[in-house]
Length: 85
Image (tube, rainbow, N blue to C red):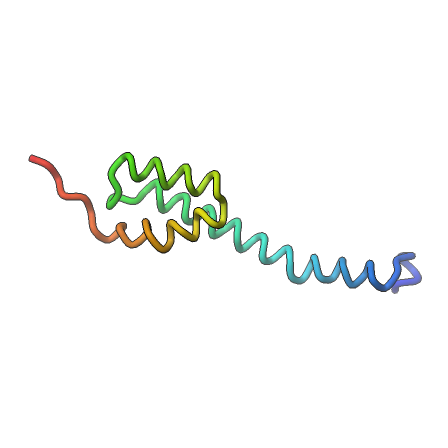
């Protein structure tokens, strides 16, 4: 197989590594990032300023911002803001 493609063994190992490990991890992180972004947009437990701050953090910090939102902002989803009279 290697001789047919004309690739050396290290190149084949690198292609397998990227295909079997890096690509699924990248796809999972992208799905997680989108999930946290949608969650921040729909979170009724955040006021408008917090919501904009979290959206900007997720957009500009990518996976780090999404992970921080998961730990700090996402739990507020279950505690809606009190309505002012």
